[in-house]
Image (cartoon, rainbow, N blue to C red; front, top):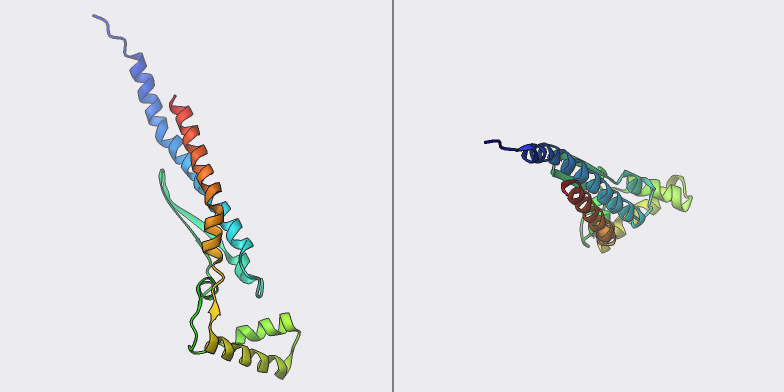
Length: 161
């Protein structure tokens, strides 16, 4: 009796490469999705001093199909810009606001200090409305992210076929 198991060998070889194909396609899809999220979020970020928008980026970690990604900023005030600030709180430090006053309003010296103090006090009393740039960017980029994953699944299916 002779058993031809050459098809089984080919199948086993294909299955060994399957993990590598899935990992590569998922990393590609996550990268495309996160690029879309980053682009749409940065476009919606207020340009106070120009540093917040340029600080937004994504990180991807994990291996294979077990990837985790996060879009974030290392700047402390990013959360306040995103969510806003409740009224009747302690005013924010006027130092950063003073830099903004100097750049945007062209004031200097005591005028800049006074304006920054008054703005900080007003923010403390009235609060601020959140820009929701991450939330809005996520909503806007979701169709592009979905396409990236759909395309990855299509490519994976072609490899299996």
